[in-house]
Length: 315
Image 1 (cartoon, one colour):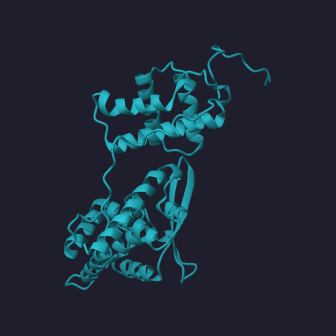
Image 2 (cartoon, rainbow, N blue to C red):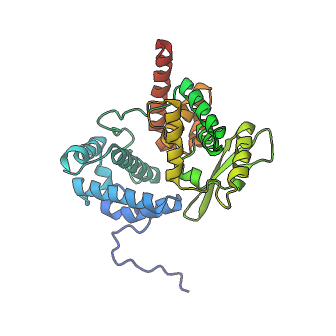
Image 3 (cartoon, rainbow, N blue to C red):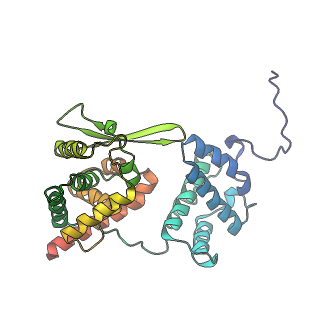
């Protein structure tokens, strides 16, 4: 095969990241950015979402705009347009993701040396504060554990509620991760320090994180396995059924808010923060990226402060 490189049909168009510079038009960077996201192991859903967000940026500012022309003011104007000028509802979740897209995209260009400054580094996160999550107070946690244990001792004993509640409270894993668990994900090699190995696949690359478990929870798991004898995944029911179980626990415990996976996930983070765990420990435990952690950490600090104030006031 010849080593002579074929002359491109359009020599001014970039064909790789090395060809990008501050004069490159936004529209000519998208496919190269997609290739970068693939190499980073991003999911197909994430790549499609980021691409759509950049197309919206091109729609608002002009897709022929050179990447070196963008400023923080321009990006904030784009976000303001998404919320108030586009005429299409923009949820807080969509808004936050689009901010993430801008930060990832322009950081990538800056790291490459294509632009001298990163205009998205100081971009506004949102036009107004998002409402804080609801978390369980310490006495509500104890009430829920008591209610779940009572379900294990009723006329039709059920070991699943307490095992499920303690699993999410102690580990903070997501609903999707919960339903995918199999017995092999429980590392029992050290009986005094069992571990939960959470695995997920991103574009044929397996990633995992290990979360500490209590020996007490492992005993609850064994009781559950004896009763239900699942054949494949630990929970042989749907995610919706698990949601119903948490709702039943919350109602039995007299908790005024609907008990959910998300509530327990935040409660886990608050408990770990108050216990003195490091930020890196909590971020990795929750499976969050450094970018996602920035906003999560700010909310977490406010939740801890709020809980401490409530306890001081006797609420």
